[in-house]
Length: 371
Picture (cartoon, helix red, strand yellow):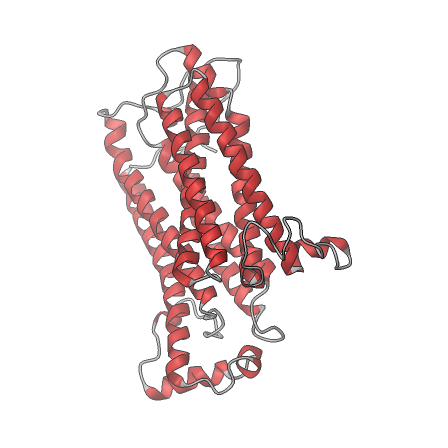
């Protein structure tokens, strides 16, 4: 029996309560996408350390007078980034980086409000099904954790370093994408979808669940590696393609000891592995798309597989353009934004297959309401 989470009646009473919840989750996902892009801009403009304190409530109010601006600038002057890189920075230049970081933090707070207040409203109005309530509480908890990790990341650059830890930045970016994926997956489960009309087509779709989850795993891995690249400014080091330092496989990939540090701290290796995973992921998505189109699968799955191929091609193209442009701001931000679209199509692929799996009684298994 298909669980209520997979109901596909577009006009029934269940859909009338699900639709506002679904639209709300889509809007939160859009805000998370904006948060990722603004976070990328904050990193690329070297603005992330301009606010040296974490004030979750009071920090909403920016400096409003000349004296308050001077006080913020004086706090910034105490950290290594100012003393070693930006010494002598004017108040006007400081205000530029301050506004980027303040906007990033304000957007994070806004996401928390936009998530929590409607959740309470829908909960009290009875719009939330029992299986959905704990999952939304988990979503809110992930958002709170993300705020704490954001400060944990910033704190790494306030005492001894001139920038934030690449490890913490990668964790912060990846968790943002996990939150997006989690909420987007729930929203897609709440979407009325016409399932495959016959069992053969449903079984054909289910054949690809392993590949779909493998694609999703490598999308997250690539996002994490992109965070390492950003944290080390590795994109600024080798600005040629398809060769790096004059070779497809350059020398110097494993010069650090112990050997495993090369994958996280060697600028050459970090950019090289990001490229190699991109090639592998693109090939995997092409394989999935080709296989899905050849098999007896649902129209929704086939269409999404095509869009996933298109998205990854655009993403690879933007990655190449970003490298060749020496990480020009808007190209780099476009590259970061399209990564979320690749993630969304990969999530949709897994979600469609899960719906087909709930339809076909291949064996006696309890299908979870949502994952």
